[in-house]
Image 1: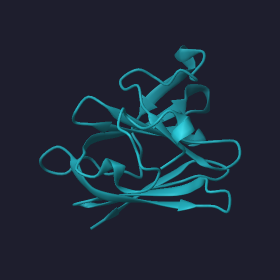
Image 2: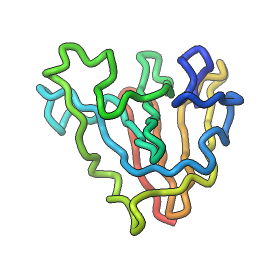
Image 3: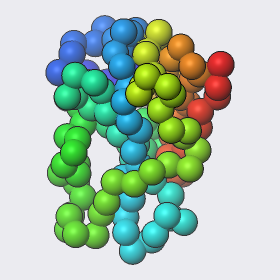
Length: 145
C-alpha cells in the first residue's frame, strides 16, 4: 500500500504489495478533519490505530493516489498546520470495534494504476473489510463479513 519512498508503514518493512499488515490488530479508526469545514467537509485522511502502539495513515494525494505512511497517533500528522484547525474524529462509515475491542487483519489488497500508484486499499479483517479509495476526496467504507 503506497510506495516505499513514502516512508514505509508503521515501522514495518513492506514488500510493496499486499500482506504487510497481516496479523495486526486494529483497535481504532479515526478520520483527520479540517475543523473549519466541519464533518461535512469529509476526512482528509484516515488513521488506523494498531494494538502495538503504532498507526497507519492513509491520505489522498493531489494526483488522486493513495499515500500510506506510518501514523503519529495520538498526535496529528505534521502536515496539519496550524494544528488548532485540525482534529481526529469518528468516521460515520466505520462501525465501532467488534466485541473484543478490535479487528484482526487477515490480509490486504491494493489496486494500482498504470503508473503503479495505489488508488484503492482493502484491509481484510475477520469481521469485514475496510476499503479506502483515493480520488477527488478520500473515501472509506466498511463491508461486514
